[in-house]
Image 1 (cartoon, rainbow, N blue to C red):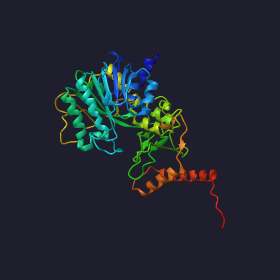
Image 2: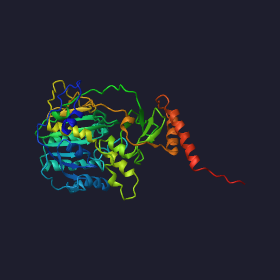
Image 3: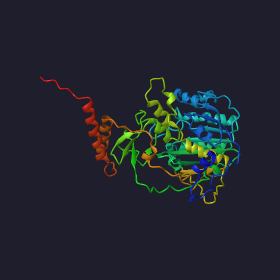
Image 4: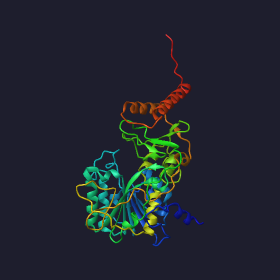
Length: 418
């Protein structure tokens, strides 16, 4: 079997799917301009479906190092406000900054200093006519400011003549053990985005295998944990205090509590291991910038699926989609082709790709969570009103004692006599 056939088989829905399986490519590959490109998650995924990156815009120095390393022939304009004209492209993609939208950010809304840059997308759309627009962001934007952010986006698109559809998608649908949900909005002036975005539908698969580990955020513990079963919680750019930090993993078989290697974090986003290594090599940097880059990235397997559907659309039947009421929150999936907004009855699982156990997926050793980090988490969790899985807090306490013992052995305290 050739490599293309293997890739198609990898992301083909199972027999329980209610939609049309991905067929051999029907349409030619597309040229893509990526705004707020980060480390190229959108463009790398689309390239796996045969599409080509024609332009990047990315202002972060570390991210542009990664882009130049992996896409050496693609021009980069650092500031999106300096993109005066797009080259001939078929797709405009923008994972616009989510710092002002995320619950972990300042929640300033769509007009925040960073997220407000999405206006540059509409400026370019008013001057050019790409076949497709792809927007990606956090699900919190559906409810932020009472939904006014989404109203702003969709109203601007409709004024420019776009039909649009969006859907919340879970990264686990593509066989990656990371519980990561993102809103994917697809729009076009000439095509039907529903036949791409809603073409696949598969219910969340039952986990038949024994759970190997739980993921959680050790920087939390007061009101939540980001708890994930046999997966890590959403990789993010930083903690609530803005410090780039990995999640922790509790391994059931050994009782070990540690954080994944940055190379496994890259793999959890669908990148090859060491994708961001160029951002630290020879610069004396620790892994903090790399965690930030990976946390901000778009999942590669998600955009590969999207890229394949752009080349081989399905046929969505909207017969049972009801009009979404204006006084209700934005649904998890909705569309408009120039009229009323309708709710689409699709799940967050386009595919039912086999999901590996977390400890089978990770390839590199966990880094034991330090005594200081463990002590802080244990104190917060013990004083909270949260409920925990059986054995979790005792395991944290046991890990703390083990790390304190190691610290004492390697750095014994010498008391001076009087």
